[in-house]
Image (cartoon, rainbow, N blue to C red; front, side, top):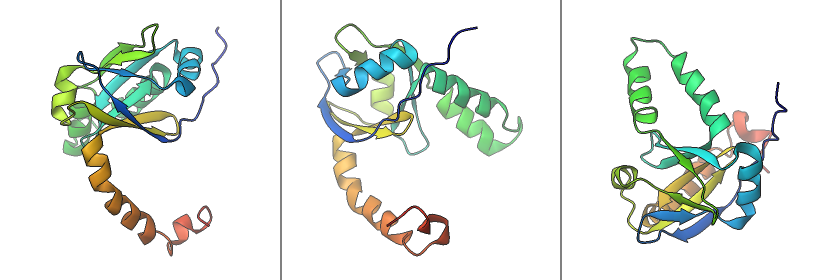
Length: 157
């Protein structure tokens, strides 16, 4: 029985450029953590917001098991499985810290060359840079809407 690897939380928004082959260079601040946590093995898929979601392999396996537990004949569950599992692609970070973002996934979420890598605790989201910039006002509005909500009052200052 192996030793469970420590979970690292990913934070921050990093603007990156893809190279001509569609490779993204993982920022150095995340590389060691990803190598320690999952040996650089990741799963890239789409999410329900039409962004890319990048999972360390152990986190993906946990998420995949949760998807498998959803009701078999529920249309919403079927839709989630079709998106998340249907587009899932295993990736391995190369020695230079690069990940090849498959063309089919770049096309689905309209990524050209500029992206934003967004740390989301245990996973990453990858946004087309223009969508991230255009969506900031909406994100700030949503964040403002929760200020009076009891659900969030314990964690927001």
